[in-house]
Every structure is written in structure tokens, then in C-alpha cells.
Amino acid sequence: MRTTQQLSITLPNDMADVVKTKVRTGEYATESEVIRDGLRALLARDRAVE
Image 1 (cartoon, helix red, strand yellow):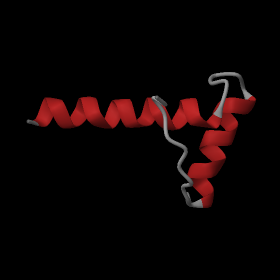
Image 2 (image 1 turned 90 degrees about the vertical axis):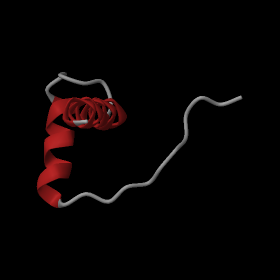
Image 3 (image 1 turned 180 degrees about the horizontal axis):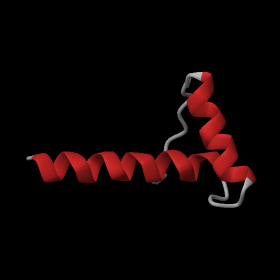
Image 4 (image 1 turned 60 degrees about the vertical axis):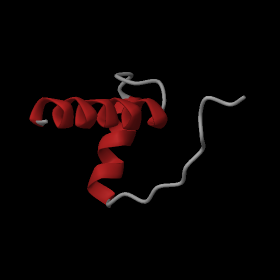
């Protein structure tokens, strides 16, 4: 059973540039890693508010 799902997202140019820069500079290996890390931060913030 797959533990991941492939999604297609659309980002404003400025956000897409941030994602690409983080990969290009080596901070992240892939665009997916950038998005996953951002979602983890969002989930942590949501849990802290609850």
C-alpha cells in the first residue's frame, strides 16, 4: 500500500521562487521536501492554537 499521494499544486510566482531557491541552495533536496516541511510547521502551529 502506498504511503504517499502525488498532488499537483499551483503557487504564486513568489512562493514558487522560494521553493526553487531552497532546493537550488541545497537547503532541501526536492520541492516536495520544502512543501512537506511547510505543512508540518502549519500543523504544529494549528496544534499549538487548539
